[in-house]
Image (cartoon, rainbow, N blue to C red; front, side):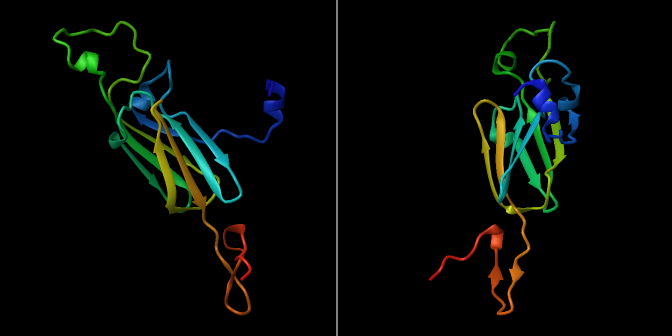
Length: 154
């Protein structure tokens, strides 16, 4: 897709709020870059978290209205941490060590209990979360079109 097609497409950037080391990273692989995908029944979001080496350093909170807040810690490299020498960084394009938060809104409400998070080895947090749908109740009191699907015929 060229830049003209991209400008014509209906993709809008999500409003993302960054704090801590995510806010300080001005150059290099940006911490907190967010992609959001949409399907009929779910949203997919991916968040770049370079410098986060362990999924235990991440907390992801998803609210029903679609608000996502990711908290974590960028850790110091093992080479710097385990070295007997004290290095002064002359160029620092990666996020400095320390805590961060990334907050954004998904396009609509979700069911936070129905999500599938995965922290990839390349530092990307990838989460699929199902959309929240209010079931429509028929005259007989049975749900219709639950999650845009029908109950299978007996």
